[in-house]
Structure formats: C-alpha cells, structure tokens
View 1 (tube, helix red, strand yellow):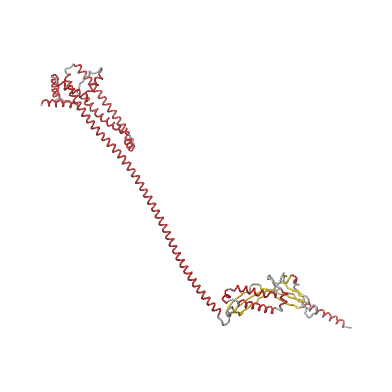
View 2: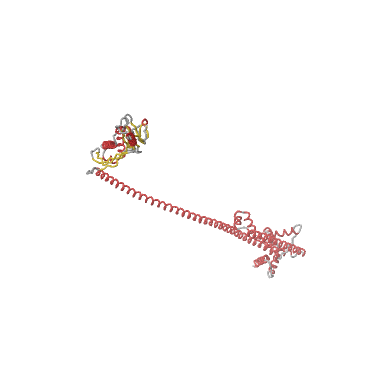
Length: 513
C-alpha cells in the first residue's frame, strides 16, 4: 500500500494547521490604554479607542487623529515586516496622560545662586501620527520630554531672583507651560495642565535659601511682632475706648436717670406746691370773702348801731322836747283849766268826752302803730333768718333802698316807742279839753292837737305872758299855782302829769323866793 499520498496530505494538513495557528497568533487586539500605529508599505493606520479631532497638535481638548485618518479599529494582524507586501511595523503609544518629574533638579537664579527645584508636568499625545513620526518608542519620548522641561525650567528661572522665584511659584508654572508648549507643537504632544513648581530648596551643602528663609523669617517675625504689638495696642486702645464709651454711656444713663428723677421730683414738688398754693389761694379767697362778709356785716351793723344811736338820741331829744312841750302844755292846760273851771258844766263834760275820744284814738293809733311795727319787724326778721349772710351783706352793701328801709324800720321803732309812751302819758294825764273850734268835733280835736306842737306852745306862751300882764290874769295864775301846790300832795300817775305838776311848783317856789 502506498502511504506517500497520505503522508503528503498529512503534511499539508499539518502545515495548514500550523499556518492558521501562526496567522491567528499574529492577531492583535489594542488595549484601552494604548494606541497602535501600524505602518505598511504605503499606508499608516492607527488602531485604538480614540476619537477623531479636527486639528492635531494645536488642540488641547483630548488626544486623537485627524478626521481624514480615522481609526481603523481595535484589531489588526501584526505580520512580520520581513513578509513582503503584507509585512507591517507597529509602534505602541500611550493613550492616557503621562507625567515628567524633575526631582532635585539643579538650577541657578539671576545672581547665579544655586538651588534645587522639584517640577512635575503632565502631557498627552494630541496627534498620534505626528508623534509616531518623531518618536521611536516610549522611553525616547520620556527622555525628550524631560530634556524639554529641564531646558524650559533652566532658561526661565535664570531670569529672576531666588526670592521672587520662591514667592511666585504659580507664575513660573504658567511660564514653564507656555515655554514647553511652544517646543512640543511639532511633536504632536500637549501639556494636560500647567507645569507645577513643587519645591524650591538649597543644594546639598548650600544655605542660600536657608539664609533667605531666615531673613524672611526674621522679617516676618519682626512684622509679626510689629503687627502683634500694633494689634495689642489697638486692642488695648479699643478696650480703653470701649471702657470709656461704657463709662460715658453709664454716666449718660445715670445723668439721664438723675435728670429724669430730678425732673419728676421737681414736677411732683411743683405740682404739690401749686396744689398747696391753690389750696392756700382758695383758703385766702374764702377767708377774704368771709372777712368781707364779716366786714360788711360789721360795717353795716356799726352803721345801723350808729344810726340807731343817732335815732335814739334824736328820739331822746324829741322825747325831751315833747316832754318839755307837754310840760308847757300841761302848765298852759292847767292854766286854761283854771280859767275855765268857772265855765259851765256842759263845757266841762264836753271836754271830758272829747278828751276820752282823743285818748281812745291815741290808744288806737298807738296800738295800730305798734302792731304794724311788730308785724313789719317780724316779717323782716324772718327774711333775715332765711336769707344767707352773703346775700344780706351784698344787699346791704349794694342796695341803697334796703339801707334806707332798715333806717326807716329803726325810725318806726323809735317813733313807735315815742308814740306808745306819749299815748300812755296822754292816757294817764288828767286833761280836759273843750274843743269848740271848727264846725265839728274832729276839727276841734285837730285844733287841740296843735297845742302840742312847737307853734302851739309858742302861741300858748305868748297868751300866758299877755294874760299875766293883767290883774285878772295875775289872780288866776295865783290860784292855779296854789292849786298846783295842793295837787302836789296827791298821787299822780303818768310821767307827763308829774312833769306838768312839778314845773309849776318850781315856778311857784321861784316866785315865793
């Protein structure tokens, strides 16, 4: 049996299997954090999870390729480059951000003072096609970026002083970023953010920064002390001002309270004094009114008493005059009686009747005057008791008619007393009157009453003087005087009768002497 064909077939199958296996082993799947740049004979393709961008290196929004060269996918076959036509070369670039760290990098400032800085920078690939044409591998990319950053840091820091560098780190970070960005435009790489100047310190064995720091520290300490002292001073001043303000406010409060208390006490005192003054004024007015009433009453009473005394004096004088006239009339009447004793009994009886009539009328007039006076006095007394004293004083002070009325009352009282006494005397007198004058008894009585007037007395006196000048008159007067002496031994009632009898006796005695 010929096994060669089968061997040949088996070899072919094995070869095919090995070929397929080898081909499958060439299959590559791009990792999410990588970008594979695949170069063929005439074509360069990019594989990876990137998005196309409109511009490459100038765009900082994110990594990617131009829109004309969109990604070919995430899977390709890495055929060895020695295979004609299908052979490829692959360059792997990072898709994520990567950093460049300068730790302990020696630099110099403007004054050639040495120091060491720590710088950290973050980059990303903006254009993978351009970056692949400039970079052979990642290590080379790292070295190139480190050199670029060192060059930028050295050139920028050498333009300023160390003190400025130490105080303005953020400014230098922006300058580093700008300088590196300009150098990396052709590389297809851009910085992710501003390069950070992490630390600035002395070089081993140097004390430049230490001295600057000590100087700065001493300056800060000095400023701190000054500021502390200033703050302490301001605090003390503020505390003093606060205490002063509190004291002033307390004093103002006490002053206001004191003023308020004083004003209140003053107001209360003034109110009390005003109240007392008003009470005193009212009391004074009351006293004045009372004193005015008393004064008016006293004055009016004094005037009334004075007028009463005057009236009493006038009444006394009038009484004396009447008594004197009565005495004269009695004497004349006695003389007339003696002259007419020899007359007819009819005349005597007529005289007795007329005398009784006159007596009755006089008694009636006296009683009537007394009753009217008593009624009027009682009426006025009742009015005086009912009316207030102030009204009485006002009426007395302002009403002249009322004053005249009071005076008339007193006059009525005086006339009443005089009339009563006159009536009593006339009633008790033993007088006989023959009234033959006039046409009737009333006219005769009226003529008789004229005898008791001053005019009648003068006429009677003239008659007696003329009658005494005759012989018959002397004899008649002698008889009358003798009759008077005899009558002196008899009891006589009435003041007027006594006066009338005693006076002729005195005349008789005078004549006897």
